[in-house]
Image 1 (cartoon, rainbow, N blue to C red):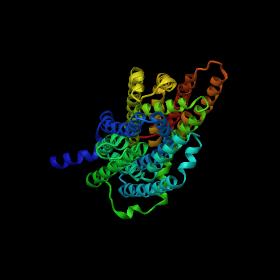
Image 2 (cartoon, helix red, strand yellow):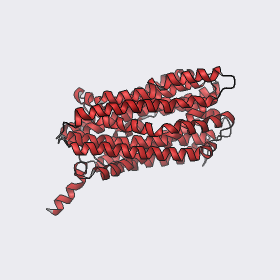
Image 3 (cartoon, one colour):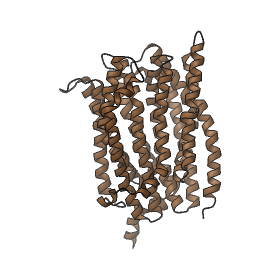
Image 4 (tube, rainbow, N blue to C red):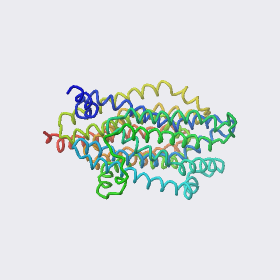
Length: 465
C-alpha cells in the first residue's frame, strides 16, 4: 500500500502539493526556460554588433527582422498556452481522452503554422523589410537573416508545443533541460559561424541565423524525446493528430488571447520602428537593443505566467476555490518580485551592459536612457502579465485580450507618435522623451486590469465550492 501511494504522488502534485510550493517547483524551471529563449536574440545581437565591419548596421538589421521572429514565437507559444491549459483542465476533470486530443491537435496546428512561415520566408521577407529601411546594406543583411529563420522555423514552432505538453503535466524541469540544450548550442555556434572559426567560413548575419535555428532544432529533438519517454499521462497515438474542430476551438478560445498578446508585441515593435526612424535610425537601433535586453525580465514574468495558467486552470477544473485563490495570490506576488528585481538590476548595469554591444554616440545614449526610463514600468507590467495568465486559466479570454491590446497598442503607438512629434517640434530636442510612453501605458493598463480581475473573481471564483 505504501509503495502504491508513493508512486502516485508525482502524478497528483497538481492537486495535492501546496500552491506556494507548486508555483515555485513549476515556475522556476519555466522562468529559466523563457529567459533562455531570450538568449537567442540577445546573443545574436551581441556577436553581430561586434563584427569587424558594419556591426552597428547588422544590429539594426536584426532589429528590423525581430517583429517577425516575435510573431513566430507568438503563434507557437500562444497555441501551446491553449493546449497547456486545456490539457491541465482535462486532466483535473479526469477527461483523459480530451487531453490526448488536445495534444494531437496542437501538433497538427503547429504544422499549419510552420507552412505559413515557410512560405513567408520564401516569398514575403524582402517586401516586409523594405517597408522599414532604404539602406541597401541593412536591407540585404535583414532579408538574409530573416529568410533563414523563417524557412527553418520548424524547430521553434514544434518545440513550443512539446514544451507546453511537458509543462501541462507538471514536468517543467524537462522542458527547461530541452531549452538549455538549444541555448547552449546557439551560444557555441554563434561566434563560430559569424566570425568563421574552426575552419568555418565567416558568414556574418547569416551565421547568426544558422546558429539560431540549429539551437531551436536541438531543443525540439530533446523535448520530443523527453515527452515520449517521461510524459506517460498523454498518449502519442497517431489517431489523435486528426484535426477536431471542437478541440481546436477550445484550444484557441484559451490560446487566442495569448497569441494576440504576443503578436501585438510584434506589431508594436514594427510600428515603433516606423515611428522612431523619424527621429533617427539610432533611435531604432537603441530601442531594438533595449527591447532584447528587457526580454530577460519580461520573459521571466512570462515563464511564471505559464506556471500560473496550468495551476489555476487545474484548480478551476477541480472546482477548488481555495487553490484557485492561492494560485492567483502567489502568482501575482512572485511576478512582482521578479519585476522589481529586474528593475534594480537593469538600473545598476545600464551603462556597462550597453557598452558591451560596441555602440557609440547617440545610439549608446539613447539605449541607456531607454533602460533608465522604461524600466520604471516593470512593476505595472508584471501585474498585467500575471493577470493575463489568470484570465487565460479562468477562460476569460476577452479580459486577457483587453489587457494585451491596452498595454501594447491602444496606449503605446498613439502616445509614442505624439511624443515623437513633440520631440521633433523642439529646437534642441531630447529624443529620450519618447521612452516615457511605456510607463504611462503600463500604469493605465494596470488600473483597467485590477477592475477586470475584481469582476472576474466575483463572477467565477466566489461561486465555486
